[in-house]
Image 1 (cartoon, rainbow, N blue to C red):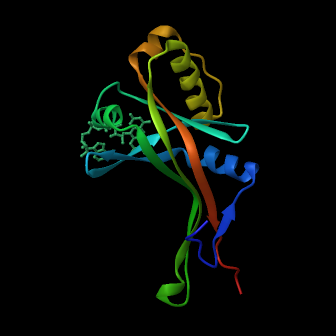
Image 2: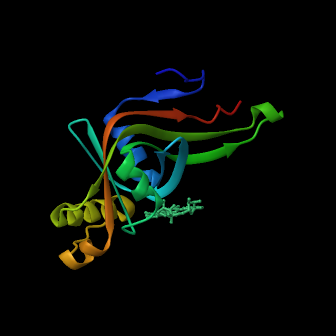
Length: 163
Ligand SMILES: Cc1cc2nc3c(=O)[nH]c(=O)nc-3n(C[C@H](O)[C@H](O)[C@H](O)COP(=O)(O)OP(=O)(O)OC[C@H]3O[C@@H](n4cnc5c(N)ncnc54)[C@H](O)[C@@H]3O)c2cc1C
């Protein structure tokens, strides 16, 4: 992967990727609105099976992100966790340690009620680590977006060793 500095580490193992997906809780969804970028923060749920990452988002059934996705379903996203600022003796030695994941894919507005119910359960599992079930009525009043992720990368920036 390009763009890694000396201190950053590319993460490729499934376990560490899964930890980032579990801990981040909020992702920033990037959309292309005609010739303008649009970024919106959202909670998410995910499945990561056989190397295939799928992300589900929920919320109101209308709004700008829906209008954009109907015109252009190509999206990107970023999430991060374990954010810890650290100090240094001089300004340029200050920094922040973190783990992060970003990727791209295609968004689909989910209409199927069974898929919506499953997506809400996945979302609640990711957000709370608890199991929830949803009925048709609840699923019908929320909007669900599925992102089929085509590519992603993850990296970790550790804090410097104390000397
Ligand atoms: C930590 C966090 C988690 C969130 N989780 C969810 C979630 O899981 N589901 C969900 O539906 N929403 C969530 N939101 C709210 C989300 O960011 C959007 O505000 C909301 O989804 C509406 O998006 P929209 O594109 O339909 O905007 P619209 O309601 O159509 O917005 C119109 C305009 O309002 C402004 N706007 C929209 N969102 C924001 C914002 N967040 N901050 C400042 N200005 C804004 C923009 O200028 C936009 O053009 C979350 C917000 C935060 C900060």
